[in-house]
Image (cartoon, rainbow, N blue to C red; front, top):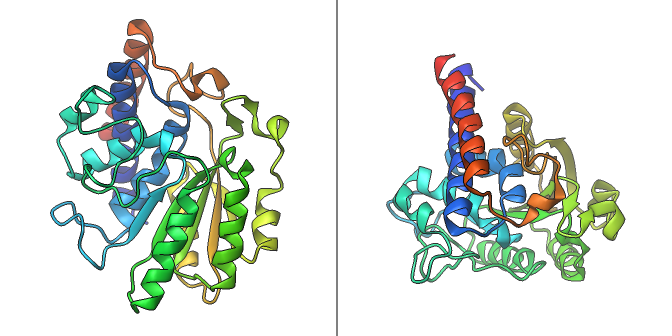
Length: 281
């Protein structure tokens, strides 16, 4: 990746984080922690990896994305707004009555949303269905599905994983956001799904584990995934929950609450400083 390309991605990821904070603050509710941890993933997918076009959100040959951990939609919405699917101002209306953007993705009303999600564990099943449809239609699109490490406590995740491997869905790429925290506390203390990589390997996946905040590592992982034939892929991304906002990082309490006025100002000041530094490079 060229330095200029990486710089552009870092700037976009910072803007995605700003959009997350903006949205959750104005909503006075929402899920900033797991949205912030996945900012680089959202950014890379929409600004480098996926074949998508905001001018034609439903084009037949587009790559599909399913946010299985649907509560982290502030991150997805921020990326979609930055990409041009809808105006940035919509982020400030998050969760407001009658607004376009609600607390979980809605494929019927929001441009760029391929699947309505929210009930944890179900998004991966929908992604499998999309991948099977692509195989049946001899289409070239790929399906990407982002899950949370706490979400994979759900049994449906593993039923879908068996299905994906059985049907050789090499057009499916799972991304597991391994930030180590879920609503009730550390993931390993709540149910202990680890070792995540070995579990997916045992279910028939090609598995990689990377730093989910490193664009070079993300690029290498997705490039490798496109070369895998005959089996689905899983990329376990090691991340920091609340990444980019100092007082939210690795703090389980920021799984699902909004910043107050002072916290909002602090967060935006930090992110604006990062943005200014990146733009000055």
